Image (tube, rainbow, N blue to C red; front, side):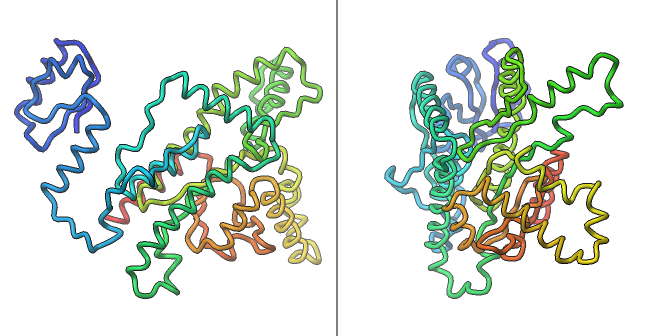
Length: 375
């Protein structure tokens, strides 16, 4: 597949001359309307993204023998009534793509103008800001995960018995739990130049955010000067949004391996730091050497696990995890294995593979490893 990202005739002619001997009817070229009138590639030239999915579908049916009985390894083309068109809430788009990829609904996008898209986003944000302690946004993800599980259930009907193999049969749940650690918000004193102390303090205040139940940003504005409010907005636009977008992009790559569902949890930060401090460097030695260390360590783990559950899981999410028999691939720096589900740590009921959020390269490195293991 070639993506031609230019409209200059001279450059298009250069590409045509360079590639014409390497291309045939097995190639497809996606261009703009203007470029499509100029290039003369010996292949199929398309100018609409929706057409390219039909080209792939027709090509597959023409060149590959698809055994319809080998479900779920062949996908049905279903009518538009089963489309999942997602929501303005960004992580739902990952599940939308997964659901429609499973079903073979390649052209599921909605034709919306920029103004209509902006209106939907504003309405979603306004509803969340009006109910910061609700879980409406997370429950959208739970509904999508339920759809994916139902599709798996249909495929499982063709399998005789998966009682003891269900955890391996089901696609892994991809879970993201971002955490704003002290290393992300506090500059090391040794790296500060004279006169930068005040700037470092203000930066720590601005970066000391976490998210509410409904994925809105919670700031501690105590002792925060009004002149710092523009800086807060700057951080949102230039740090927070790219950060969570990166999670969604990496999650989509992981989900594509086996059509996995995706659950992005809220960003945690100072709202869990007091609980985490008991397993920090300053206290861990005293905790590990205390006379009743086993009992104390267990209490600390339970306290951290309960805090995570209370802060970032809706009742529907807890119920889903109670019934969810599959591996969990978690992208986070938090000890997500300690999350308490009905009084039991998540790591006791599920196989949890944790990919550290920092360094971010680890999330992608693990993806390449999974792909190489499949080959």
